[in-house]
Length: 191
Image 1: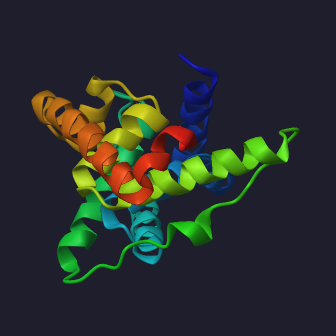
Image 2: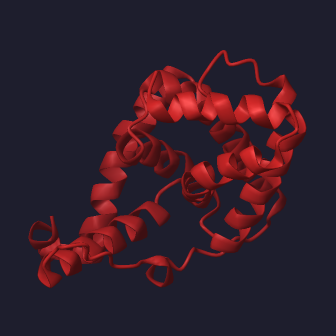
């Protein structure tokens, strides 16, 4: 069990006992990943924020039903993703997320050139992810960015293992196609 998992278990226990500051700590620990996952599905920052807020309310209300059969983060992210998909179904037209406004450079000891290259990579990868199917973008983020296993992704999304593997394969291909469209011959310089 990792340090984060142990901390989650302790915070869940304290939250179940009525400690609201422990629940606040759980929210703070998982809000960024939750927002990224919801954004993968919804492609709109405002809608994703709404979905995450709704999901955390559901988590607070249902925290006593969490039985620790899986990691807390797996349980939470499944609620976030289900909430995002439910919101997506409710929306007739959803607007593409403005990725450029959400990027920030962190230059902690990095050369400015390296930081700019990393910013470009993030920008183009996010643009490509926003132009592929929501399921594929979600699975690529979970697998590569959050290093979740196929089994964990299955628990989080409720998708079958075969769908996850197919979407990983298609997602990689579609991502490459999107990067080719966006960058053309410059793709080799960026990566």
